[in-house]
Length: 104
Image 1 (cartoon, rainbow, N blue to C red):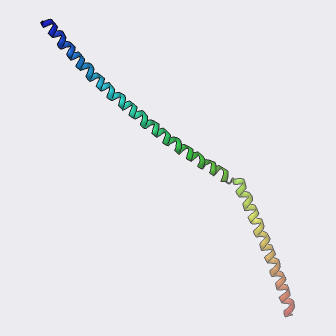
Image 2: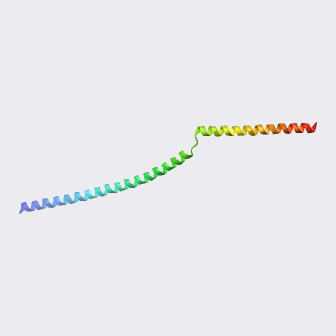
Image 3: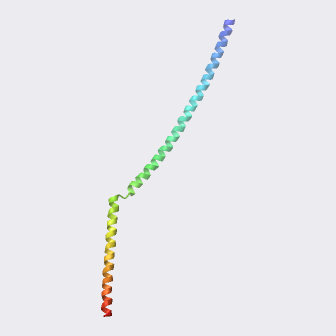
């Protein structure tokens, strides 16, 4: 009977080891699944952030002003100011001529 008892004891220890190993494996699998779910949520968040940034870049690209456009605006502004100064000078000259004519 000692052989049967030794075999039963060995089988019992083997079952316990298998049970412990399976419990550890289940815990590891649950941990891997949890990390996978967290990674999926993080990827979803990052995808949303990328989409928002892409929209912002599109808006900026649509509204951007290039250097040649700024140069053209500056040229137009300078031309308009020069025209205003010329008209003001002509009016001042005409007014001075009229005043001199009235005084004399």
